[in-house]
Amino acid sequence: MTSAHSTIEHFDCLVVGGGHAGAETVIALRQAGFEGGIGLLGDEPVPPYERPALSKDYLAGKQDFERLLLRPSEFWTKHGVTLRLGRRGEAVDPEARTVTCDDHTTIGYGVLVWAAGGRPRALTCPGNDLDGVRTLRNKADCDRLIAVLPRSHHLAVIGGGYIGLEAAAVLRELGKEVTIIETLDRVLARVAAEPVSRFFEAEHRSRGVDLRLGTGVTEILGREGAVSGVRLTDDTVIRADQVIVGIGIEPAIQPLLRAGAEVASGGTGVLVDDLCRTTLADVYCVGDCAVMRSGPGVRIESRQNASEQARTAGKAISGHPQPLRLVPWFWSHQYDLRLQTIGLSLGHDQTVLRSDPGGRGFSLFYLKNGAVIALDCINATRDYVQGRKLVEAGAHIDPALLSDVRTPLKEIAAATA
Amino acid sequence: MHFTVTTRDGVAHTVEGREGTSLMQNIRNAGIEELQAICGGSISCATCHVYIDALPGGAELPPASRDEGDLLDASDYFEDNSRLSCQLIFGPQLDRVRVTIAPED
Image (tube, rainbow over all chains, first blue to last red; front, side, top):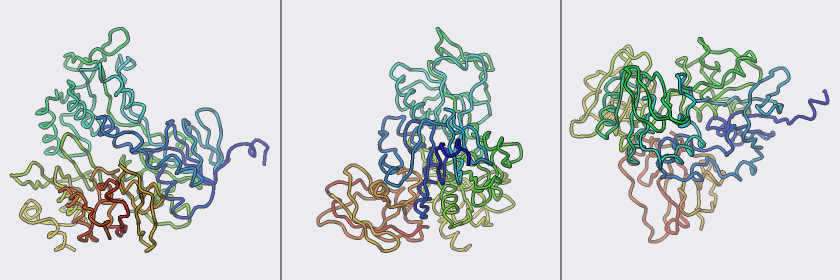
């Protein structure tokens, strides 16, 4: 033992990342009876909170922050968890079993759980550093936007994914002029099929959103250092005093990559087994950074995935391994619309629409080789809960039956089981 | 004010109830970790399912919304007294309520 080693802070389990994945790992550890010292490193100055609300009720001013805390502040101390907030883990030494932080401190670990999430992808066009170009990933981002809203009337949202659409919905309801700019020819293109995209586009347009599809951004225009507009690829200029960039995240995987952990092909995420173990000894990875070997080969950026992987890692570390078989689900709220998705539609070769002409919602099944692999439900909670079993089972069902709204999905599922 | 939560091992716990905060949050804040409550109370999952065993005399619960009903209805463990604990806000009317955490779906 060197003297340097004995003076650094050390935790039996160090969790890097104070989001859902990190916080829930800690909770799972204690619940599974882990008795060692736990350190939770978070780069935000606040204890872990419900992130999905940021682009919904919190931005709308309908929910105060204290209610969003995953646990009350005193919970962590009470459970012997040392919170190290405002600090980011930047390098991992798997031999020395240490993590070096952005403030140059070093922390030792017995077991490491990497739950560092990601940072919003930034715009690269000219003007990207103007005052008013912002992202919406954490509380501070959201607070800064809320602070300028009273004097902001024209907001441009770059990216038609969940975050962009949810933020746009809130901003419209607050009476702002909103433009959404999406480079692809439809919104939600990465996660949903065309009928779902078209439905949300129509809803946003009917609410007064100026939606520009198949259009990129060439420049953010400014006046005295602050945003004044956005120049599009078709050379039109949109007026804007704020620009919200929602074009995905860059996962914080570099430290594990440099430490030698095996990554998914293309370097998109850190490969983990069904106990969330990386290829490095006693190093786990959970949440937005992880790609499960047994899964579809992509990172799954969702609250549920973070939670399930965290529980899996927490149990495994505590000596109660329980392999994870994840059936992902997602939700999004926009205006009075509730989108619920179960499964991943990746690689589907057929869609089946299930729509009640009298209702405002519908469901869309995704099939691959005849098997149900995913289901999108818009204002159709009943289909979502009843259809879950069909997705979990990868059931082969006659499309005519799936689309028949007179037959509850529960009956179909029962007949298949 | 307080209420009673029976966990899946059959043990009853007395929990301090904080007014204006949901039963789900009160249960979680008390250190009872059996509710996943993944959607954070936005009626998008059913991972905070409880049974209402006994209401204090004269108390009435607000009726479940259609979404809450649909979510509960699909649970393998649905009972007539099933509720999502995120939808019940604690206050004097729920003082001394007794609930049991439903099995995990």
